[in-house]
Length: 505
Ligand code: BES
Ligand code: MN
Ligand code: ZN
Image (cartoon, rainbow, N blue to C red; front, side, top):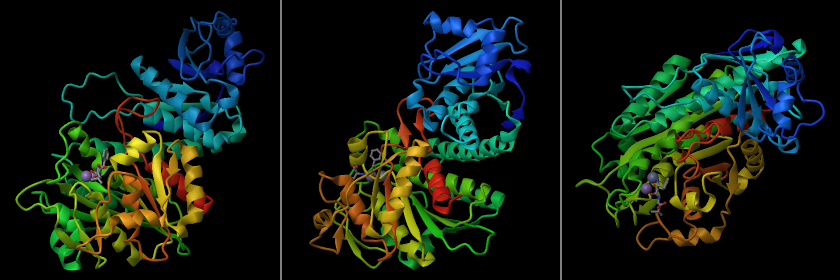
């Protein structure tokens, strides 16, 4: 995809389609200069349309006008921006997504947009980023496994037409940012959408190694025999019912700036298929359990983005990857395993496997003496029930207090919102075991928090840690403005924004 800022006026350009945004009930002057000029070139056609109430500027609605020789442009695409007071960067991403999808439906491969002109209270850079991000995320399709693909051509070029030459560089900068972030998110979506017969732990490890080679990252994959030597038995216990070898993936980015102080470890749950193990799940919706690797896939997309953006940080990705299947070798309810931390765990339910693989990964994280550990995991159905698909659950230890606010703000900015659930000590009383140091489940009530309470026991004392339960947000069962059905890629944009805000970048 070719994305660039171009200095010029939309009324002078010869393209198949030019995009203009219109606020709801825009009465006096149009907000953007482009809108004013195009309207008068078309003899007030846009104003007529609004007055006739055929097009009201309602959020995400679209109308297309043919210019019939009145302008060098062939068509004008009008997209509704909704009420001015409610406008936000998130809405700019949404209208951009809708616009790009519509353009593709018209078989147009080049889109000239002026949407970044609608800056209101945002910077040109942020506006441009949102337009590119929304467009590229919106037109995402997972077609790799279709042999007869009949969808229209995809968009090859996005031009951000800009009248003000003074902001061209900023717009280009924002556009580049948006492109890297969208491509990384779409990379995560591709991985997460890939079915379990293809996307095995070995496949994810190969993808991580490929990423490392392409971008000059460090990558080390711990195989089962090494994991056993080290003592990662909680991780291995989940893997033992599967014919696919488990992989513990370590991928690392070190900024070339030698003065970097911050090491952030991001842990991603990567259960490439979660059948529940011997505590077998019901058959309904089981096909969606290929998405149980979404946290790990997000970590890979994040590494790719952070490297391309050259953020001044030391970022370590830890991805415990395995299937969770029943077999003659499988983990059994009642089994007790000794985790990497040395703590023994009584397995009451083999379907609470995510916390087992994460436990060893969280223990492993301490060897990097991190400033912060964040984990991303499709951990509990309870979190999806509690928050629905519009927010990820956030739980954190006391040490992470200051980081939580930055993360919440990053969530608002990116539209990948997080909502905090409490992590009071009371919840930990529910996972006391009669047979081991701790047990892996503690009842249905507050199950998302109990899962987090379990994880907290494996985080080294004193290290700030934030847990994100993405069970509700990693997969969407309906198409939204720039979120397709299936894998959403959640976490990538959120954590990039978080790191950028944290570092003041
Ligand atoms: N991967 C699931 C959680 C999940 C459920 C993610 C639905 C996305 C959609 C996890 O491994 C799991 O099975 N959790 C159990 C925990 C329970 C046994 C305490 C659950 O949520 O039912
Ligand atoms: Mn499970
Ligand atoms: Zn799971």
